[in-house]
Image (cartoon, rainbow over all chains, first blue to last red; front, side, top):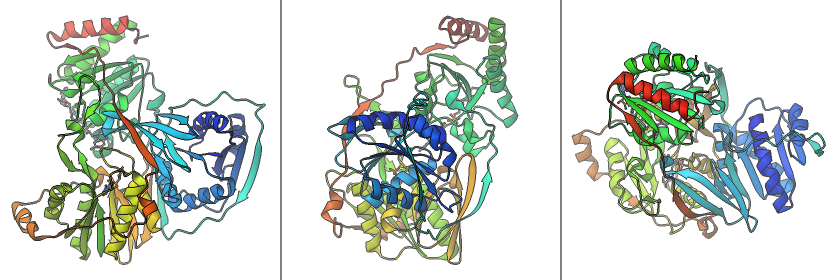
Length: 316
Length: 254
Ligand SMILES: Cc1cc2nc3c(=O)[nH]c(=O)nc-3n(C[C@H](O)[C@H](O)[C@H](O)COP(=O)(O)OP(=O)(O)OC[C@H]3O[C@@H](n4cnc5c(N)ncnc54)[C@H](O)[C@@H]3O)c2cc1C
Ligand SMILES: Nc1ncnc2c1ncn2[C@@H]1O[C@H](COP(=O)(O)O)[C@@H](O)[C@H]1O
C-alpha cells in the first residue's frame, strides 16, 4: 500500500495527489491516515484515498514516539511499500523515527518523486541549495517526506469512493511528557501563497523600520512581508511565518524584493524559484546581487521610500 | 551525567563552487568544518556539565581527517572523542546504526545531543533515528535545555507553537541554531586539550544487515542560478525610475 500521513490536512490533500499516481503504477491501494480527525475522512476519499484509516485514540497531542508506534501498527496490518509524510517539523521527526524502527530508507523534503522498477527515485536539495541529490531506494519500506506546495491537491471528485475504517490503537507509552503548549504570536501570513513578497534582513536597524517594507508591500498588491532568519529567529521582530530560506519557508512569488539581506546561500535556498528577484543593498559586493535580476546599490532608508512612491505613481 | 554529542564533519557549503562545464558542484578541495548546529549541541552539553558535572563524549562517523576537526570540540570542552569510519557506501540507515552502536559501546548515557540538522544534507533525520534505534524518547528543535535532578526540561519551537517537554533519562535532544552561542576555545584550552583522547573504533558490533544502505545516491546535480544581474548604482532617482520601468515591462506590477 501507499500510506499518506500528515497532521496538516491541506498537506495531506497535496500528498494524496502523488500517492494516487504511485498507487496506480504499483497497483496498490492508497491509504490516508488521520489520527483523531474523523471529520476529514470524506474529503480524503474525494481527493484520491482508497481507504481512510481513522485512528481513535486518547492521545491529545503529537509525540513522535507514540505516533510512530501508531503508524508502525498500521503498516504491520496493511503491508508497507511506500509511506508519504508531510514535511513539517512533526512530520520529519516522525518519518525518521519510523524509518529507524523499520530499518527503512528515508528521504526528507523530496521535490520530485518517480518510480523505476517499483523503487522510488527522489530528488532533494542538498548543500544548502547548491545542488540536487538524486537518490534511489533499494528496498521497501520506502519513506519520504514532502513539503507544502510541491504538489497541488487533485480536484475534488465526489464520485471517488472508498472505505473509511475506524481503528482503536493504544500506542506504546513514552516516558516523556508535554508540560505546556503555547500558541506563538503569529501574524497569519502565508508566504507560500504570496504572489509578491518584500523581505527584510539585518540591514534594518530597528523593528519599527520594517514599516518601510510593509509600506512597499502594501503598494504592490502582494502585501506580504518576508524576512531572513535572524529577523525572526534571533531578533524576533517578525513571527516565524515570515521566515524564508533553507530552514524557513520556501517561496515562489512572481516578484521577490530583498532589502538589507546579504544573500547567504541559506536564504537563497528559500526564494531561488521566484519569478523576478530584486535586491536592495548598500554593499555593491553583497552576494544577493549574484542571485538578483535587478539590484539597487544604496541605503535602504533612502531607497525604499522613493521606490514605494515611484511604484505608487506607476500603478496608481 | 553522561553526555554524548553527535557531531558531523561537513563541507563548508558557503565555499562550494559549480563546475563551469558540468554545472555540478565541486566537492573536492572544499574546506571541511564541524556542522554548525553540532557546536550548539556541544555548547548545551558543556553548560549542563558545568552545572551538574559529568563527562562529555563526542561521536563522529566520518573520514580519518575528521579527527582534526574533533580537536576543536575537545578544546571547547568535550572530554573524549570517538571516531567511527563509515563503510564505502553509507546512508542514514547505516550511519544511524554506526552512531547508535558507538553510543551503546560507550555504555552509559543520560542525554544524547544532536544538531537540529546537518548543514550539508539538512535532513533532521539522524537524531530521531538514533533515538528510535535506542528506543528512547526524543525532543527535537530544542531552544533551551534545563536539567533538574533526574529529568530534563526542554522548550521546543514549532513555529506556530512553543511546546515544553519533560523527559527522564536517557533522552535524545536535537538543538537549534538559536539555542546558544557556541564558545570559542581559549588558547589555554586549545593547548590543554591536546592530551584528551580521540578513540578510533572500527565497525565492530554492528550487524552486517545494518551496513547495507537502503538508499543510494545516483547523482549530485548542480542548480545553476541564471539571473539578469542588472545592477543600478549611480544616481538613485534614475536607478529607481529605470527599475520601476523594467518591472512594469516584465509584467510583475500588475
Ligand atoms: C543551517 C543553517 C540554516 C539557515 N537557514 C536560514 C534560512 O532559512 N533563512 C535565512 O535567511 N538564513 C538562514 N541561515 C542564516 C544565513 O546563513 C545568514 O546568516 C542570514 O540569512 C543572514 O541574514 P541577513 O542577510 O538578514 O543579515 P546579514 O548577513 O547581516 O546581512 C545584512 C545585509 O544588509 C546590508 N545592509 C546593512 N545596512 C544597510 C542599509 N542601510 N541599506 C541597505 N543595505 C544594508 C548589508 O550590506 C548586508 O548585506 C541559516 C544558516 C545556517 C547555518
Ligand atoms: N556522520 C555523523 N556523525 C556524527 N553525527 C552525525 C552524523 N550525521 C548526522 N549527525 C548528527 O545528526 C544531526 C542531524 O543531521 P541530519 O539528519 O543529516 O540533518 C547532526 O546535526 C549531527 O548531530
